[in-house]
Amino acid sequence: MRGTGAVAYGAIVAMLSLLATVTPPVAGTTSAEVLKDERTSLSVSGGTLHGSLLVPPGSAPVPIALLISGSGPTDRDGNTPLLPGKNDSLKLLAEGLAARNLASLRYDKRGIGESVGAGRNESRLRFENYIDDAAAWGQRLRKDKRFSSLVIVGHSEGSLIGAVAAQKIPADAFVSLEGIGQPAPDLMLAQLRPKLSPNTMAAVEGLVAKLKAGQTGMVPTGLEALFRPSVQPYLISWFKYDPAREVSKLRMPVLIMQGTTDMQTGPADATRLGSANPKARVVILDGMNHVLKRVPLDEERQVASYSDPSLPVEPRLIQEIADFVLSLGRAVQ
Image (cartoon, rainbow, N blue to C red):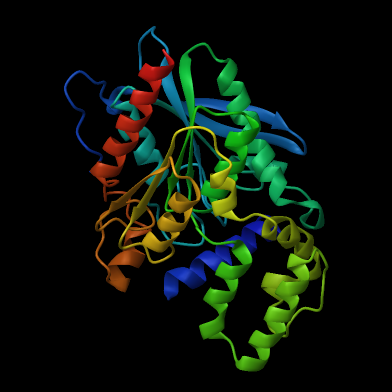
């Protein structure tokens, strides 16, 4: 595995769960096809993070979305080296938002893509590093006079990172895309249970209980990739966070979006997140999968969609986010 142990762990969990045309610009908007990403970087503890800024032309301030990718070695565009080809989900989302006069910044998390040099020693990495990195990007955007408001948009595990970072910045609004609704240890146990023998599962449950209590423990036989001693401190830091509890703390507009053909998360996750915050708006998009594309519940077509950049991001997703953010921008102005 490349990258940090946390990256490897997230990738394995994502793969376990996986196994169980950008919309045309509307009138009065700018075509994203004529825009080019602006390369940008941010110095953080341990190195430098690299990202892409997409800003519609014009002199008036516009809202900006900070896009945070999901677990595993997923880069700023939504792609992973663990699968052949690209899906470009976050890149296509950024272009779709730009076509509606919305700026965005997406970035490679530490240890991933161009930000590989910022990867920490595995035993020192903590989930809070990802939260602090997102908050640092947001605080920089806050100071940029080109932007009228800041919205955090987190995809999959990036939803949890974004929910905590949004509180720290603070942001003007928060959007969760295919966000995990249950705590990480509960999700992990649910994914592993049907794949392990009763004895091995009992050992896993015992170790997870210790990690939740802030203690390290013995590695179950055959699961060194998930639970090796050097990654256990990271798991302890991650297991402390309950996505629903973090969403409940948000004192800003919240939009929760979930597709019905996602094989990694589902409407129950969106319901749990939305129920935690009475002011949150929950939108369920029929036929949208985990990489934000319209794909049926067919395993072969689902897997293929993770490596097909020609498939557009679901147009309704782009429009819902744009309507939400632009209404916020008008309110702020």
